Image (cartoon, rainbow, N blue to C red; front, side, top):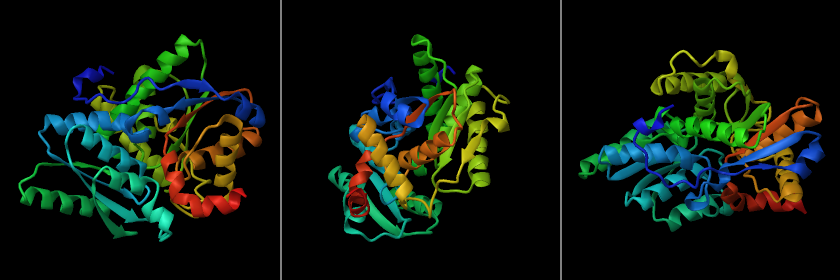
Length: 333
C-alpha cells in the first residue's frame, strides 16, 4: 500500500466527499451514503481520473509524447483521458467504437463527444464489434512511424497501473469512514472494464478490510465479469506487494440489470436517474452509475440490504446525459 513507489501525476480533487443520501435512503428503506467520485475535478470528473493519475505518471516517466486510447462513443474515460493529456501537453489519439449502433445526432455529437472535440483530440470512429486492442496498436504504430512516442491506455484505463487509483480509493474510503465512526456494511458500484472494481477489491484485501463489494454489471455476463475483475484484482494485489490476499469470493457481480446491452437505456434506468435527481439532486449517468442505481433500487426494495449501511460509489459521467436527450426527454414527460 506504499503507493508513493509508483509514478503519479497528481491532479484529482481528493479526497472526494462521502455523504449521506437521507431522502433516497428513506425511499428505499436503507441507510444509504454516496462516495462522490463524480467530483474528482478533471473535465467534469469521474472515476477514470483516479486511474489517470497513475497512468499519466507512468506515461510521463517513460517520456511519452502522445496518448492513445479507446472507448464507446459516449466514453467518460476518453473525455477524462483527453483532459489529462491536455494538462501535460500530450495530444490524444482517440478511437471511438459505435458500440450501441445509435446514429442519433445527440448521441454521436453531443455529451462527451462534444467535449472531446472541444479539447482538441484526434477522433476516429469505428464500427461496433471492431477489435479495439488491434486498433490501439495500429494507432500507436502510426504515431511511432511519424516519430512520436505513444503511451497506450486500454479502455477504461483498466490495467494494473490504472487500478492503483482504486487501491488508493479503498484506503481513502476507510480513512473517511473511521473519521466519521461510520461502519460500512457494503460498497456498491458499477462494474464494466473492471479497473475500479478490481482496485477496490485489491485495496481492501491489502488493508485486511472486510467490506463486501457488489458490482452491478453494465456489459458482460456474470461469469465473464467476475473472471475479469478477479484476474485484474489478483494482478493488482501482486503489484502492490499483497500477493495471495485476494480471495475469489470477494468478487461479486450482479449482471441482471444490463438490459438489452451496453449503453442501451431502459425504463428502469430512466426511473433510477429520475429518483436520484428528484430526491437528492444527484445526477447519475445512463451507462454506468444509472444501471448500478437501477440494480441497487430494485434489490433494496426486495429487502436485500435490510439493516445494512450501504455506500454507493458514484463513478461520474453525467456529461453523457446530453448524448441521450432524445431517449430521456420523452420518457421524463
